[in-house]
Amino acid sequence: MEYRCVKCGFRIKTLFVQYSPGNIRLMKCENCRAVADEYIECEIIILLIDLILHKPQAYRHLLYNVLNSETVNLQGILWKSTVGFLLLDAYRSLLLSRSNEGQSSSMSFSLLAWIFQKMLKDVVLGNVMFLGVFLHASRILLNTSAGASRFKDFLLAVLISSYFKIFLVAMMVWNFPSSVIYIIDLFVLSSNTVALKVITESAMNRILGVCLVAHAVKFFVVQGLELRYLRY
Image (cartoon, rainbow, N blue to C red; front, side):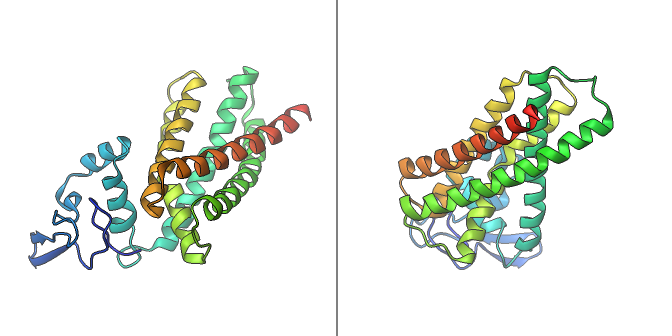
């Protein structure tokens, strides 16, 4: 993906000019005449806050100007993000299962590990369905191409914008009600919507429809597999 102005999304060749170490000049966008990417000089905490606030400028900076094939190894980031995404999804299912069954400390470690492995397989299948529906709905509702590079862009946007799942790790330490998991799911859905809006520049109602359909299919597939497991 090319560098983009975080304000208007216009393509630019370079973000800054470096005269000497620590001495740079930020470039301006030829389209909107604003500084192309002001996040370059901001602290990481500012970027994190703007991501949580769902500001499109922060997502453009992250998806176009930071995760750029010219500066980072996108293939490695995709693999690591996918593994982390699946593990957190499996842990989410495990938390819900333990909450529904009321089994928090009575399960042995071996049984817990077996259940987690089973849920990880279900989560992988659910996410394969999720991505398949996501790409198919994108082609129909957003009129996007289905090339390999475009698939990587979509996959990277979905994985990176699902960073709210990291808050599930806090449930390893503190006890939260199961409703917190669904609140995190809503944040992931809204974050995916903003990221897809930045990538496709399509109408918000169509993007929201794509994300809702894909997440709904994933939810019902995973729930159906878990119900079959519980009956067994």
